[in-house]
Length: 142
Image 1: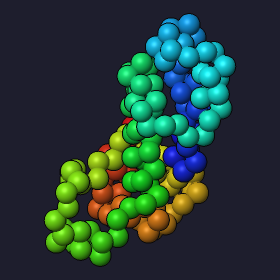
Image 2: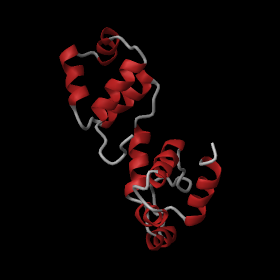
Image 3: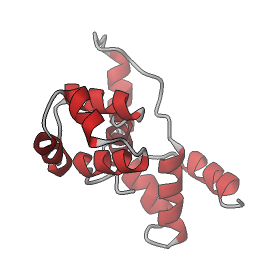
Image 4: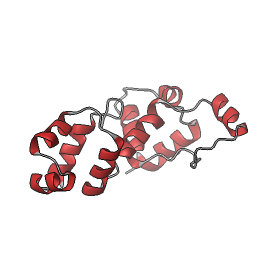
């Protein structure tokens, strides 16, 4: 899975095929034509309300793809984390970063195929060394 360049339309098409959802049902749900659905499949980005509808229809959290992108490619620096804790923010605050199994597998694959070193992973994605070594010990023995 390529979390860097997300083409949401192709991901939706893949989910539709895997779930065997008929086009007529999709058109009915969105109240649009097959041509408009096909246009969504070709689109690299989709309006958030439409993506929410796709997530409900296909029972898949498409927003998680973007969360994984942020975790991997825009991690908070240690300096920013401490500064943000001091500020009072009106937006909801979520727990610390939760790595999904897909992200863990992706990172371990980068190390196992020698695409990246352990230090590269720590520097690029901001994953603590202890967390990375815990993953290596826990998941590489499967």
